[in-house]
Amino acid sequence: MHTILDDVAQVNGLRETSPGLKLFLGLASILLCVSSPGPVAPLLVAAVMSAAVLALAKIPARFYVKLLLVPVSFAAMSTAAILFVTGGGTVLLEIPGLPLAVTADGANLALLLLARVFGGMCSLYFIALTTPMTEIFDLLRRLRVPAVLIDLAMLTYRFIFILIEEAGQIYRSQVMRLGYGKFRESVRSFGMLAGALFIRTWESGEALVLAMDARCYDGRLAIPGETRPVSVPALALGLLYLSAVLTVSFLTGGVVLI
Image (cartoon, rainbow, N blue to C red):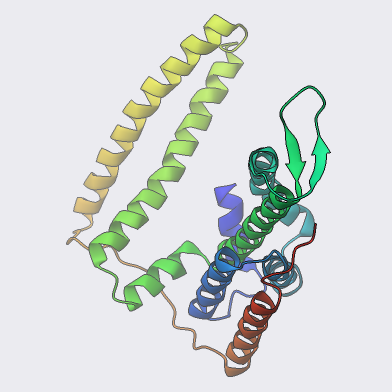
């Protein structure tokens, strides 16, 4: 999945748009979703961000929907508990024989949280699918973020994928040898996978240090970057969108759907 995301971010329709503008719009949308007192504004953010990803960035709809199913499913399970925990208001549903009931206040709160998560994830995917990580690191460098933090972020980002790749190779080897055929064998195979993964990751880190020293590493990692100026029409359109969302958030703050 990480390779697919990187490939999509490199060839999307908004590739030539300023990464600073895309990051600003995405983060501002997330903040508006989190701070919105009603569900209408986050749903508006989700709709606009999804339209930008599908229509402007030319991301395949099927791939985008698959990405959204993961966080939305977790959010749905979390909000299901809120439905029964939060009380107050008219009782909408009561389970016979159990002290559990769904009230209007609980349903509105669950809907608000679900809308916030959905809008925030759409905004986050807007950043991830349109802006490569190299451009984000370069933007952080231009914003005068300490170099040591950027280097740590780059190394962490790299080693996450090394960890996933090594785990996948070991797991496939174990499956081919029927290492997960029975429960006891599965537990034993998982323990061996964890031990081997730790050793391989440690060896990969040492190999990276040797490679960096061989290339005269001086304490700072080079970040390939390309300056893209902010387009005035794009900036105006982005500010208009944020102003519209902020206005909707204020006007619909006290609106409840149930």
